[in-house]
Image (cartoon, rainbow, N blue to C red; front, top):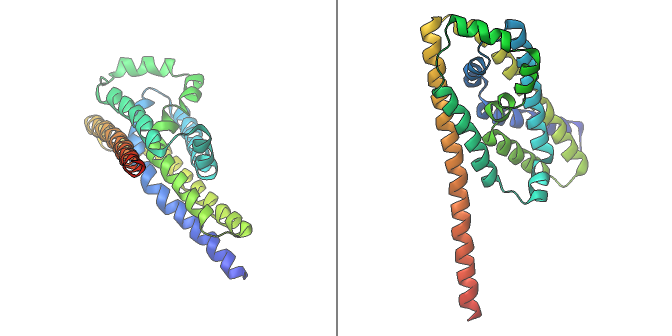
Length: 241
């Protein structure tokens, strides 16, 4: 194959991964949730946490893209089960945010003392990177993208080039996520205290609804699979008789 064919495959994989994962991850919508969960943290702690969360989210997407199908197949876990389990985690996080009380000045000062770098590092993966940023929908999408890249061409070299093109696309998604988390606070501060509180409460409600939708989609797929299995068993029994 010509160099142009390899370059074209690299570019298509880059835009496939970037254009597919970026809307699912939706960094602008994640930023207010990030600010709510890190309420009371200092500016330096938030910047460091934004960097850690972006790195963890990017590694999750890369791992899902490369080895997601292998891991799920090894444990016998379906994508529908991933959606149900991850959707329940998102519902739990959204419910906590919706029912959380607004912190006053004294509470924020107290939280700033408690929000140590150790606590920030502990939250960098759960719940911020998973499932807030990279939820089951994002993971299943990354797995789907990886499966499509693997099945596009039997050539091992071309498959390697396609994966090599998808990885920078995921890195670009992680960079956009970092920018949104890093500069979310100064952008939201223009709304004022009441506007920011309203916006964050609405974002928490959207997160709750998103978790319900993800869980419902997974339960729907599981239910359809159960019906199909029942139909196959009925057909097998009728043919045997």
